[in-house]
Image (cartoon, rainbow, N blue to C red; front, side):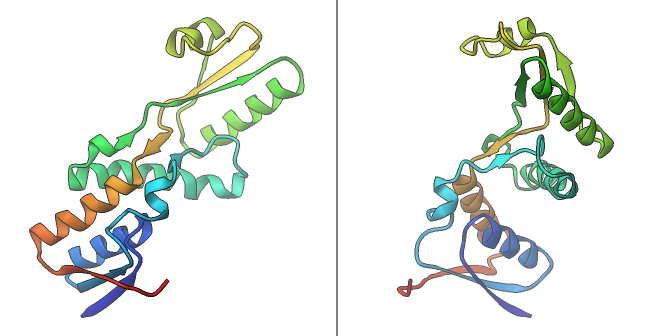
Length: 171
């Protein structure tokens, strides 16, 4: 089967990689090099905390996907699951923080309530003395999307030789 994928960003590169791995002959069309467009300038944040509950399964699956793909293609250096810290002062903010933590736990995510002092040790440049509640979400982080795009395309070119990239001059 021959398939064309338009765009070699994070989504297009991932689609091309998986289709090629499944045996399809894939041609990727992009105006530039893989990952050098929007994907190279995005922060590519991997987070779920504080998002609408309906979005949590998708966001948590995305975090798991990035861990799996990093192992698959040996691109662990592009994945930074360093965790995120969430702070709240007293009152409504602390209550909302607890609600968000419970929602993540409901979907199997790890959430740790830590002391403001412990948060200060993890991130010394952040002032924590006004925090009443602090949550650490260890599985969250970010991915270097541009580098991951290039790794996906380059790996498949090397291993299977069936992904080709063609530059397009059309916007």
